Image 1: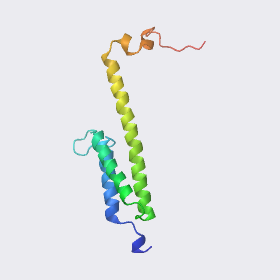
Image 2: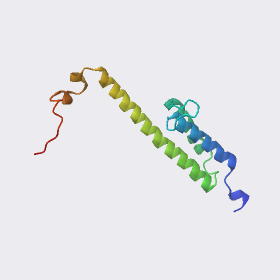
Image 3: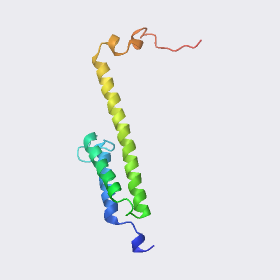
Image 4: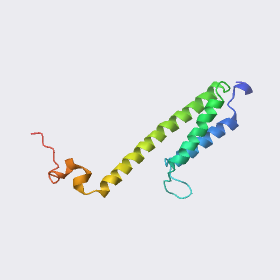
Length: 121
C-alpha cells in the first residue's frame, strides 16, 4: 500500500470527531464530564449536517476507504437520530397522557382496569 492509498489521518480524525460529538449530543453514551446522559438533538443534527456537507463537498475526491468511512458514519448517525426523534416524540406523547385524567388518557384502559388478565379459555 502506497502513501497515496492510505487514509488521510486528518480526514479520519475529523469524521470521528464529528461522529463522536453527534453520538454524545444524542445522549448515546454517558457524558464523561457530568456522568449523566445529556441530549441536545438540535446540536446533534448540526453535527450530522456537517458530515453530510463534507460528504457532498468531497464527492469524487475521496479514496474508497475514506468514502466508505464517511458514508457509514453519516448513515449510522442518521439512523440513530431518527431513533432518538421517535423516542422523544413517544416520551412527549406519554407525558401528555400522564397529565390527563385516566378517562381522557386512554379510554381503552379505563374499562375493567383491575381485570388485566388475558384469558383465552
